[in-house]
Length: 235
Length: 206
Ligand SMILES: [Zn+2]
Ligand SMILES: [Zn+2]
Image 1 (tube, chains in turn yellow, green):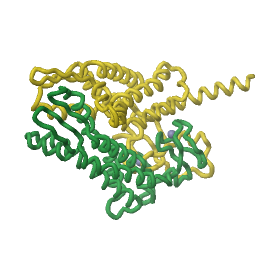
Image 2: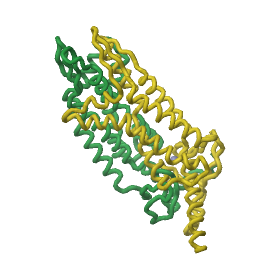
Image 3: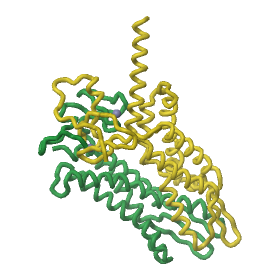
Image 4: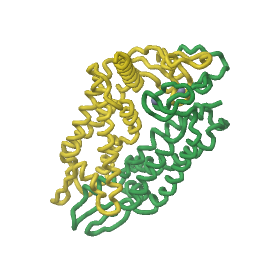
């Protein structure tokens, strides 16, 4: 495990300049203070105090993240509308899509649960992936970040624990065992799309290094501000 | 790690340097700054109300946890059978069918994790500055485990949703969600919010 974040050995004397602050990072988990240094792709900078991974850059990360996020969104669309599971018991058929599972609670007082299930397995995962594409796509082409890219990326980060597609898939497996005694279940195309979605999301989260994204946003933000200042002073 | 540390000396922190670190993105700011310029998150050297929020969500989660275990998760109606299944009843039923592995998964996700989570969060909230029972590293790991594993309790809610949408042979067999599905989902969400409300930096404060 190599790392090149240097621990700040003495607190900066007097009021530190903003430029000096730009080079400092505090571990979000334990507050340990570090001076950032370049970290090579596939290397990781780990907090010496609590062991949290602070920086873990990957080569061509942005284009890979966008490709995986777009793939996940396409799989998500397929998973929602195509038949998910096909149940047959004593000559009768029943077919359910992911949308049916969401709407299972839609009558009366169970409606809030329907909304929650829809949010956890469809809306939040899709929103999170869209926010990441919104943040990264313009920057990948070398352009400036879109307005509020920082807030968008922070929201995507906050939504991560609430994005429960993989948990839903385990729920499907358990449900299949429960009905195995009374009926035969055949997975439809949406089931495989959903499995693909979970795999792609895992790959996506593995390539994602938040610090690289934050640095890119900050670089473009300050470049934009300098340009605006220059334009203002010219006028 | 090339950390020039003096043995025994406390680790330099943003706070000991008189600075504020952003808990979302790690950027460091001068004291008095209110919002992170990078990600827009509100800044505080330590969040003084974090523990209050932890306890508020904890109690909310506990209140809805009781109906989740008393009332039915599933209401099943077939030609020959009509019954209501609670969380624990579902586990017993799976055991009866010999599905030991799935019974264990549901027991783990719906009973062990929620109970363990209530205990772990309460323990952390009560002893966040007291390292007599667990040192900083163990407390930090416990918090990480609670945050990581808590969301998996939602499995049973999804199982109910899938069964209710699949098993709809009007006259012959139907499965409907019970009131416990709502209260259990709320309990999982509230305890997730409780765990997220911690300011983990307080674990490490001297
Ligand atoms: Zn740390
Ligand atoms: Zn920030």
